[in-house]
Length: 472
Image (cartoon, rainbow, N blue to C red; front, side):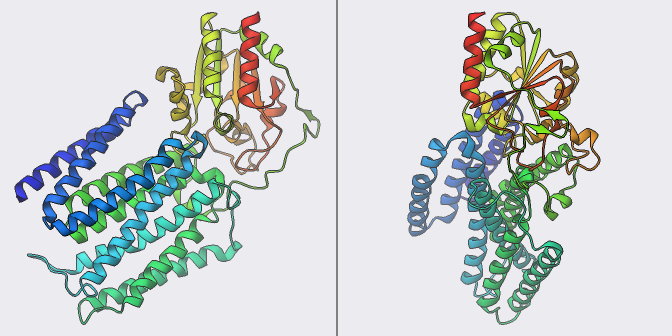
């Protein structure tokens, strides 16, 4: 029976890795998700065979059904603008589950005194359980705060206690470690008091809250990726404590991939992960900016004028941002691109790594409208194209197009790689108003000599431009 279980686990692991490799390209992402999901089903069956106790089967199956009933409806009905919140929430549930598993293991083993292995010391298993408890609780409550910021239940700007923030976080971290040490020492004697384990969960949970609260909304894509990595590592640690190979492998895959993604996104912002976790940047006061800034004046345009510019272009680049997601304008953009391409105009899409509210947000959005994967260009691949582009259309993308990142040493985002839209011969920015982006800073692009503003709902504005194009 054990041979069958291990064989099924190996099949599941292979499917996890194959599914993950499919996520490296938009064209194979859906297939990759399905393969990984099938692998999880195989691992689930292997776990049932390994347990063998039918009474436990019933509890697990009931829990599975409840999870399906709760999880599927929001996943199917959630709007694209709310997908980042859903990802944060689902990730938090994973961390919370790991923390509960560690708590359950602590209770079942009488304060870890009942742990036993065939060979080798027990202490590493205790340490793994304690690590899972700390990181799982931190990830759960941190993800809940991220969800509330994205859902605008909490303000998107940094919420901190100033200079005391980092000392506070350090004290909380040390408190969780001290409680874990007390529990660990108790496990080698008569067993630790459950109060100390509860203290671990509570203090680590508070640390999760105080860590994410000071992080501004502009850093949220990186935060979501980091929390996802932490959840994976905590799951691997819990699997080590439970001697569950499936949890170890799956957790390490999630932890490793999440860590790599977090590092890549931090590099895309030209900031260290430590500086992002330290918080204090992004999501500042988001009041509307004036249509003029000093001697600079933003020039408005109409759908008809925008259509004329586009009609005589050879190449057009569309820069999607969160505003496009809010307006659900992806299908309208695809329709406009069809009209332009029918006139022999090449249309490309410039994707910044941290555009939107989660990793890959814009790719998913455009794929939903059947935009060609080949037309979606990453920042490094498209930046050299702007100088050869006749018209760039910026739809709701603010911070990732802000030229101050290159030209203003006093700007909070100075040094952050951005899309070089200002090099285009003409830039048309679609926005509802002159309000700042998620980082809460003004964008000089709006006042550029080659920039015009098309105000209004992005979906309606793009549709109007398309109709004007058809009439030419």
